[in-house]
Image 1 (cartoon, helix red, strand yellow):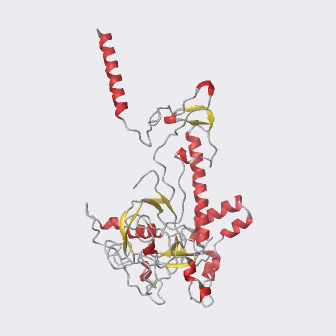
Image 2 (cartoon, one colour):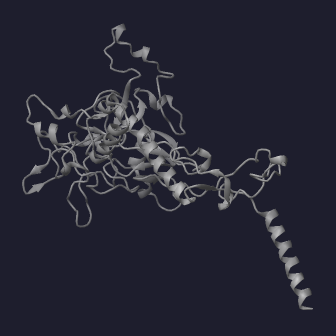
Length: 418
């Protein structure tokens, strides 16, 4: 009798499991054992030892890249809320949607660039290393004694976590390429150690005796253990992240009635709350000749750049999205980009629909615009408050650099339509 009950329980359990199996829908993390398109078992050996079938690697949520903060995308209104003092009309307000992405919580600092130079010097040709050196002479001025910064700003330990400057758009882009390779190399080593160092695990942790672990740095995208490329943010991403409108929204209110002039609440430049009340919210030039205030009561505490984690972060957790240094973005500059680019993930990569011939100086135009000028945003230690507003924009040649422009990296959010 007991045996019959036991058998009945087993049968019922098998039926329940079969029913659950039929009702279960495959996901990226749990695709099941066989293809829902062909019914073929994943990774199954064919007859006569023929090549194994399609393999599906274990997949978990991808690791978050070092230094990055998640920026949840959505609809927003891009464009300048400041008075157009330059009369450029190059960033008129319009509604767009920006997909979720990741961004560095702070600017790339001197210590990060020195790390980059270390590996280039060790692993690359001398000319590649030399091409990556920042232009420290950007601090030099004929009628100003900034000579100590030329020598010490990049390499002196006290400036380690100050934003790197003197880097061009091209140099910043090359850094992103190197950082991607270095981070994925470290992830590949970690992946190898997790899987026993000599053998790779198959679907859901099953050990495969036939296949050796992939070499570090050689993991494929299909492995799910490779991060997308670090890159410069697009102008739309940068402006959206600087706005950080999540701090102004009420539950289920999509009107976003409370716009922001700066990356913080209100139209003032000083902190209106708490123990930091009265202190400036960013590192900028207060007025002619006033970079830091008077001794004993410095207004922003920084005569040049400042520690990358100084000043309160915005509601996305990003530091210095206004002031400290301007930041390179990916976009080629055109004054009419706001009219031309699409309203989902807007981006201008070249002169499409607005070719550089329209601005050809050979035709007698006094224009600096071509396909080699890039947008930079955010304001710097040397800029007045006008440029701290996220919607303001300027441009410079991609091979040029100054003591007021740095950058931070961004990355797409993979495996999601958000």
